[in-house]
Length: 418
Image (cartoon, rainbow, N blue to C red; front, side, top):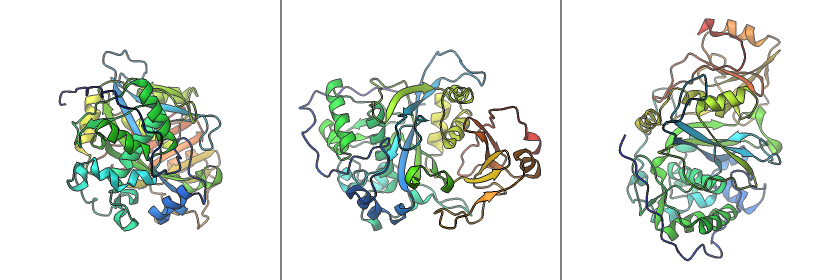
C-alpha cells in the first residue's frame, strides 16, 4: 500500500455565500425522496424515466484504520472500523436503523458544471469498467446512458459525488483533493475552520448545488477516485417503505488511514454516530443492540473476509473496474420465517418482478428448515425476525468479488448441503 498522507488545511476564506444557485430541493439522504410532483421529483424523473418505480441513491462504506486496537469480537481482530449512522426514530424510512451514510441522487450531482473541477480525461480519470462476464449484465444504474437523459456527467461520476455529498451532509466528513485530481489511492481531507465548515454543511443540506460551490470555494475536487464500486442493491417490491419508497442504491467503498476529524450527526435525520468493525457490528446486531437492513448485514458479513485495512484496500482497488450486477432480493414467505433470495439461487425467478406490477407473491406452507434441506444451490438470507438473519451461499461470486462469511444469528444449522 502506498504511503498515506493528510492534505494541508484550507486557508480561511470568506465563508459560504448567502445562497447557491440551481437549488435542487434539498432532499438529503436522511430526508427521504422529494415529494411526488415537487420540482425536484419532476427533474429526477426527467433524468431517468424508471424513477416512477424507485429512486436512485448512493451510499458509502467508509472504513477507517484503528491500528493497535484490541479485539472486541469472537469473530476476530480487525484494524479498521466502518461508519454507521443512526436514523431518527421520526424518519419516514427505516426509523431507528443504523445505516451507512448516503442518500438520494439530486440533479445537482449530475450538473455539467462539475466537469470544470474534474479531469478532462475519459470517465474523469476513473478508468473504464470492463465488459461484464458472459451471461451477465452491468447494473442499470451504471449502464444507463446519462447523456441521452440530458446529463454530460457519467453515472459513475455523479453517484460518487452523491455519496460524498451525503456523507458530508449527514456526518460532516469532507473528502476532497486539491486541484482537479485524480487522487492518491487513499484519500485525505482538506478542511476549512470548523465554524465555516458547519455553515457550509447546513447550506449543502438545504441545497445540494452548494456542494459544487463549496468545492470551488476551496479550490478542490470531490475525491471520486477514492471510492471503489462495491455493489448495487434495489429495495425488494414487498419491502417498500411508506408511500412505496424503493431505492436503487450504488454502494461504494472508501478506505481512510484513520478516523476523520469533526465527525458528528446532523441531529435531524441522523441522531448518532457509531464506528464499528464488521464483526462488532454483527455482534451488536445479534444482541439486538442495533438494527440494520439485510443489505448492510450481507455487506458486513462480506467485509468479515478482511481483517486488515490494507487487505480491504488492495482487494477493492484491484477489482475497482470489474463492475457489479444489480441485486434485488425476492422474498419467499415460509411457515416460520422468510427467505430473501438473491441472484444465482436456485429459487430466484428467471424474470424477477422489478416493478411490482405483476403482483407476484411467493409463499409456501413449508418451514425454512424443509426448504433448506431440499435445496442445493444457495444465495439467500434466512430471516426469522428483524435481528435474526443468516446468509447461505455456495455459488461462485461474479465480477471477481468475494462471498460473505456465512454468519447466522441463532443455532440453526443448514450447512449440511453447503
